[in-house]
Length: 363
Image (cartoon, rainbow, N blue to C red; front, side, top):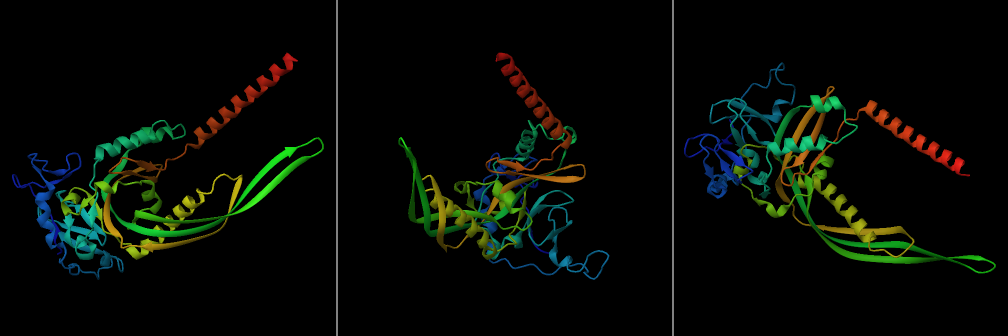
């Protein structure tokens, strides 16, 4: 079986995990605290750690595994209770299903899979639940029963793999600006329209443009959680993952480069166009954008994922584990919507009728 990392308290041998409130490893049994630096040596062998061997179970049993399904799963042994953990090929940190001790899957973070940096969680599960309740409050068109019956099916803190791209951009733009002025004399009204050919050139530098490297997560959802403050990132240590879930990337840097380039190009076009001012209207005629990308960084960013259900449908919310920014779609109560729409229409009709009646009697 493949090797796992479990962190034990030196005082009572209990399982310890990273605590976001104190930014240290904390033992829930004896309240011992360990500095992160004291655990750095445990990660030294990640550079040369080999890949795991094949699965130890029989893949030929069709009633257990469909074709190709077992190839994406591996078996790990919990060092605390000896139970077997099953993990897919992107899981990097999880917990034992038997004793609930946090474990880090060593091979998923070794060699080229080892992140450069990690941004530790600053907000805990309680903060995520409070953020969801705040997100629900004050929503008039949210189904009332959703608030009353709403329960959180799952709350999980997960380190999401991100690629951070740096780029130097050379941009040129051609625009047409239009100015008009009007005046009159005793006989005529005049309109003068002037057309200008406008050229813009710029060199821009982008640093750490993020693209999530997990195909499991919606790119738009992850982009909605931005920005993450990279200044608080630290050199990667597996200890930061203890007590949380973590995925390794399954989208390579090359595969993520296209999305990063599109984000950079869109921002560059917007910034270049914003320099054209002082005209009644501006039309874009042509732009040329060249990118010089540098080697990307592989980092893990903290995200709280919350899943709720209502009327058989799942709703996923996400919170930035560093800043607390909360995003997620909500269901619409159609009856409440039409009641609200009709009440607004009725009030508007009465106001218009009253205004017409007042004008009539004032004449």
